[in-house]
Length: 284
Image 1: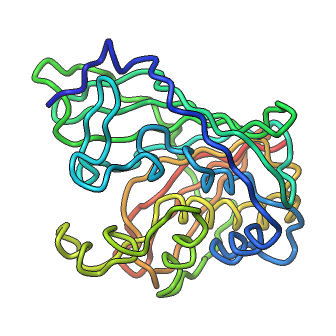
Image 2: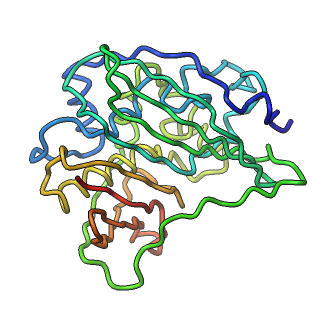
C-alpha cells in the first residue's frame, strides 16, 4: 500500500530520551574501530540514539509485519534500505550524558518502484543545546506509485583525478555483533546483521554489516587520516550507501582533498572493488 503522502509529510515521531555512559562510549569506539589517537566521541555515535532513524527506528517496531505503523505510513521491515545519511555537528558530544532525540518526516520522494522517506533528526542535550542534527533517506521498496517522478538528489561526485590519499580498514567477523550491542533495544535475532538464518531467508549469503557501522568506521578512518585524529575539527559528514559490506570484508577508502572538505569513495577490494559508500567530510 503506497504511503499516504499528505498525511505522512510533517509527521513528528515521538520524542525519545537518550542516556549514555562512558562504558557505552567505549563500546561504540570498539565497534567502529576508533583509534586511541582520537579523544572524544565521534558524532556518528548519535546514530545509536533511540529514534535516530525516525519512523524506521527499532524503538517503534511492532513484533509482526507490518512492523512500522504511523499515520499515513505502514511499512514492512524487509522492504527498507538506508540510502543516505548526513550529519551536522553543532556541539561536541560528551563522554557521558543525557539527551532527547526528536525526528520529523520532511517529505516523501516517489520513485515509482519505491518511495524514499526524507527525515530530519535532532539530538538535544539536557539543557536544550543542539548537539547533532541529521538528514536521512530511507528507501522503501514497492511503496511508490506508477506516477512516481521525484528527481534523485544530486550526489557529489568524486573528482576525476587520482586520489590524494588512500587507506584500508579491516573489519572482522564479529564487527556487526559488536555494533548491534551499541543500541539499547537492539536484538541479535530476527535481523539481517546478526541472525544468519534471517539473512539467508532475505536472499543474502549471510549477515551483512549495518550501514551505520560502515558509516562510523569510514568516519573514524577519515578523522585519523585527514584531520590528524582531531574530532573537534569535524563539521559534517555525509554518506550515500551504494552496496553491502559483509563482516570480514576490508574497506578501501580513497580520499580527494578540496577546500575545507574531503570527498571519499569506499570500496571492497576483495569483491571486485565494489563501491559501498561515498560522500563528503567537512572540516572546520
